[in-house]
Structure formats: structure tokens, C-alpha cells
Image (tube, rainbow, N blue to C red; front, side, top):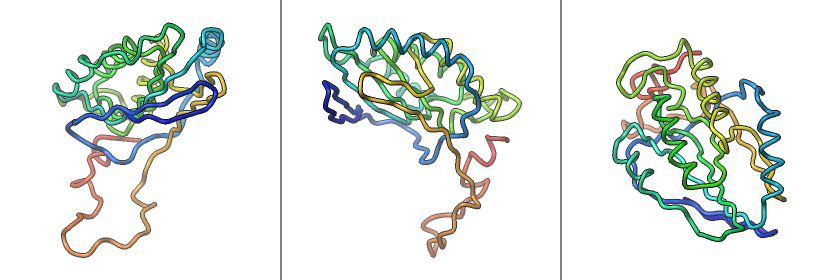
Length: 205
């Protein structure tokens, strides 16, 4: 995890770990605003409890790989200050399997007081880690991923204010037509296609 420093009794950290897989582009358009009232109520409760704030960030856990999932389970809580809130930002790519995503978020929430999650491109793939088809399209998959977050207490996928710190997950996506740069000559980097980028095959809009 990465560590950042803020004023107003706020600190941020960053975990480091070796993991398999590694998508580089992610995010998708914000699909819904449901259950914001519930999240706003939880946010108000957090403000009342807030004293010191430690914020951590990590991405690309790829818990479809068992070694990575075990790394999460072996993760210990950071700090033991009674008045300290520990916040973890998870920036995408936990698992393409909804149930593995849910279990990983639960495991992480047990180690942190607040969890913010933004879906990554792998989270929107329409096949699970076992290769079986899942949701009808990636928009439906995104809604299902967000619903998982909404159902878990203390897990957020919408903007959240903690004291003087505002955390705002950003949803976006990538498209081949946006790449206007010249291709690298030779065979060092293959052209973007269904053969080289799994998103073009495993995501459907």
C-alpha cells in the first residue's frame, strides 16, 4: 500500500505486494446513484467518530489467483490507536468473479474501518475465474459489483467525506479509438486487438 501525508491529523499509506496479473487501464462511467441516502447516513456516523485518519491505497489485487487471495487473508490490521480510523482505497481489479470479489472485500473490511472501492476492467469481465458466463453485459456486471459494495457495511463506491478529506472514486473506461499515438515500430509492443487485449473479448457493452 502507498502512504500519503495530509494535514488535519490525516495520514495515507500504500501497501506493496507481489501479485500475478496486471491490467493498466480501468474505470467505467458511473452507472447509478442508488442507496446514496444509506451511504450518507453512514458518512454522518463516521464524522462523529473521526479523530485521527490513516488512509491506505492499493490496486490490482487479482484474487482470482490463490496466492493473492491468501496474501489478503494474511494481511494484518495497521496500527492499534483507539481513536484512529484506518481507510483503504482499493483501485480496481480484485476479481472477475462476483463471489470472490465479495469475499475479498469482506476480508479487507475486517482489517480496515472504511473501504472505498472502484471497479477495474477485470471486475467487468463477463466470465468468472472458472470460465463460465456471468451477466448479460458489462453494464449489468458493473451494477452487480456496485450492489455488492452497497450491501457491505463500511464499503463505499461513491464519494465520501472524512473530516477535511474528500475521497471520490472515478468511473471511466478506455477505447481503442482514443489511441492517436504512432505504434512502436517492430514487434516490441503488439497492436491493440482482441488477440492482445482481453477487455475487447471479455467485456460487452
